[in-house]
Length: 98
Ligand code: SF4
Ligand code: SF4
Image (tube, rainbow, N blue to C red; front, side, top):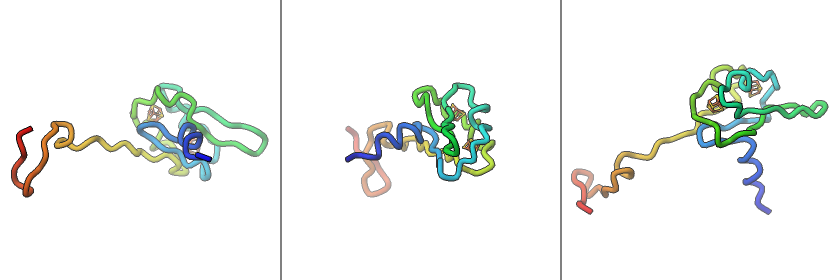
């Protein structure tokens, strides 16, 4: 059974990842998000933030510093310039012409 899919759907966007185990449900992050990416789970004592509009996340980082638990991590890593340009480094000094 693949348990990664559902977990990542509700805990991760392209830009951020939430550790719901340390979330104290203060809702500061959902209040700070301008795109309504972050929703709430409130079932009795089971309370934590979760991703509800993953595609809306722009990576603005407004949710990251407001969390008192450091539960939100910025995970986006841009592709390297070499990869984007399609060149292959040779001997560390030159590039192949493709
Ligand atoms: S990075 Fe910005 S858009 Fe994405 S969840 Fe955080 S506050 Fe919302
Ligand atoms: S700010 Fe942090 S502790 Fe508060 S709801 Fe968001 S993730 Fe949970």
